[in-house]
Image (cartoon, rainbow, N blue to C red):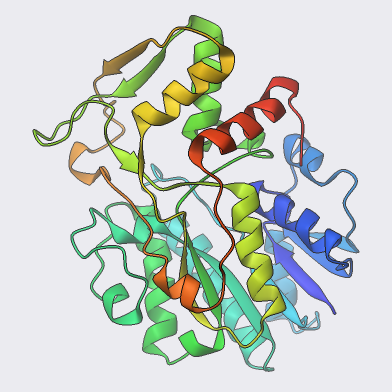
Length: 321
């Protein structure tokens, strides 16, 4: 089986590459924009070739590359603070649409990454049913660009021909290259080691205490398990939430890091920076995973404290999956 994996040198992509290798898949073409840090993510992994992402698009548009049996599209700009509409539209919508058309036109499989950022402030809940997806109102440009592609598939009757993943807050090894877009776990570890405390944003809602903003944090190995389930079950189509179904607070997360490091808990609540619009901040996310379970995925997700303990072993040694 021939697989193309975009974003294959990135965080989730490189972890998925390991999962694919472990299940015997090695005929894999990676598509990404190489950097010295991302190259470390693929050391020891098996794949046939690596193509730069812009060249890959040119090859498709020029008819110079054969469609794979499966294309897993994880490559995107994942910055939640990038407000360049044109850039995000091209990278997260136009690019995705182009490769989806290419693969689906020859009846090959297309799996891709969406995002929980599409849910906005959660006013319409977190159901991944298509009718609910049509109602969503993302809060930032990143979420909007991902939402546009979800809507394009639904509107054009293609959603039953693909498999999409709405990733919630993923954390774990191989995200070292992401800088400010790293998980809160990684940033908390660095900050606590450096100054002995962690700064968290104040709450600007009367009904939510400081640090009690909540997210559905999911360990990257669980994400890989979900994707591999769908790789092995080609009959399963549609867009699915990929989260634990259990929201946890930033306070919970930070306390778990302190406990691992055996340090006294010290949290300082600070004002949000001007780069973040207070009115466009998600105070709560929690994946509705009924659809995922109905599809047949029944594996238990890693609890936050357990996942953090596993991850911090990697961070301590700067190890890679």
